[in-house]
Length: 386
Ligand SMILES: Cc1cc2nc3c(=O)[nH]c(=O)nc-3n(C[C@H](O)[C@H](O)[C@H](O)COP(=O)(O)OP(=O)(O)OC[C@H]3O[C@@H](n4cnc5c(N)ncnc54)[C@H](O)[C@@H]3O)c2cc1C
Image (cartoon, helix red, strand yellow):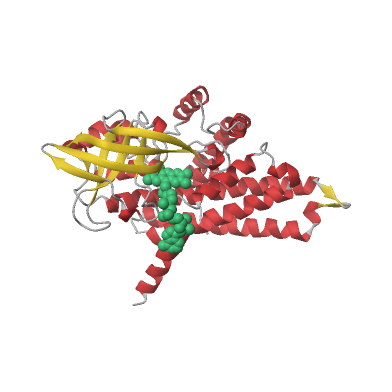
């Protein structure tokens, strides 16, 4: 049986309370914003007080090492807390956002730790990562953006697309080809500050569920050599590390979303009577409930197993791919059944379900489409038998 420690169970309960008392009350305005075609993200007047509350409760720097002032929680605790975050359609994560934190911790040098990691870990700055390009998304090794050394500088030229968090990012981690090496070999990471000449935010792109991404152009964007993050030509592995961190988080968020959808489904099914019988007494609805509860249970165990392995320093890339596929498809089905049980109300823009459905739809594409993960998992399984 998987069990959280007493301390971590208390933290999970604290987060659950925070979600119920602070975030769920903000759903109405988030749903209204999305229905008006605006970005669903929190406006500063809502985000500010929330961040204050997080600081007050100690829900801050949760996976930051102690020497940087953080709580250094193990992944099992973080995933339990992330599951709670998934229960609301209000987009929110406790600062700092984890994937870039782990990439910086893995490869930043002492100077970059002081200039970038420390303020980021303290939640004082925000960041984005620019990997995808118009011709290379699911297969990022095909990227064409190039950085060329010029004296003490690097000059970046190219185009990136579908980049999240650009509007709030103080700096971007930009992946660019530097060597002549083919595919993954020869890709290097760079730290590019907002406002750097030659970094052009070409357009904002409206995505499903009130989300936003951005298209960026790098037009002779010149950065000092000190902005190179990690080793030249070896940026791919730390980039994969950050993707693994996000994929586990996504598994926990999907579990939370499905829990919320199942709660709503059960509540509605016990109240709604059609043809003289409660929906809860219909076999079709009961099977949705059973399948949802079973798959939620499986997903939670998958996430916790991977988190526990990660805490032991094990490589969980395959588990992360399995979770990415299973969790997103499971949550999509559970939310869809909840929407169906609500009938017309389920397909209005008045419930959180439709935002969750849209979010999880996008999740099947970003951090690697399901089909790419399936192909990767199969390749590893076959290779392991050679
Ligand atoms: C909401 C959102 C936020 C994002 N945020 C970021 C970000 O912050 N930074 C960033 O760099 N990128 C970001 N992305 C981009 C995302 O990572 C890519 O969209 C994703 O990797 C897929 O790339 P693509 O869109 O080019 O699709 P393609 O690579 O063109 O794939 C299209 C489809 O082809 C199929 N396919 C592809 N390869 C295979 C295969 N090997 N086998 C079988 N089928 C296959 C899949 O069905 C796939 O969905 C974001 C995307 C979204 C939707």
